[in-house]
Length: 137
Ligand code: GDP
Image 1 (cartoon, rainbow, N blue to C red):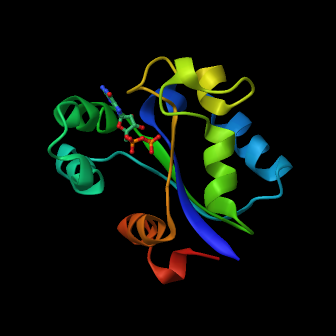
Image 2 (cartoon, protein in one colour):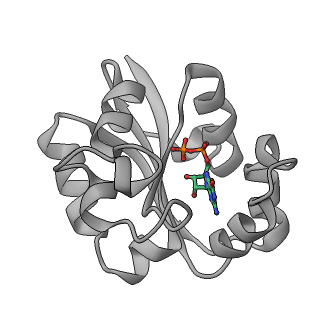
């Protein structure tokens, strides 16, 4: 059994696709082990995306991520890191496969509706960034 962090980003919350994203997870047999809505400060967004701090889009990305509330979730299931990335689609919606969340709902490579951890180590860091053990069921 594996865990991963999912975020419905501020653009996704504004577009009211939260229910649709959760529906896709649950239809795929993924279990939601924790969920909450949070409005990140700029500093909190910078901490979350610290691995990207040298990238040219870091300032714009962290402005976007702190522009409105997002919904953070811990997903649980067999091979859930890969399964979630498959449901999300490629970072750039123009390159995302048909039927993926980003293909269907993302506006741009930055405002791309959802986040999903990409490996067990990043999942552990990202889950602990938002949730303590008592909040994960
Ligand atoms: P992910 O794992 O698919 O989310 O992609 P990355 O870890 O490479 O990038 C993290 C986030 O930064 C992406 O989800 C986008 O929101 C944003 N991002 C990635 N590449 C670019 C880019 O070239 N330009 C801009 N403006 N944002 C980007």
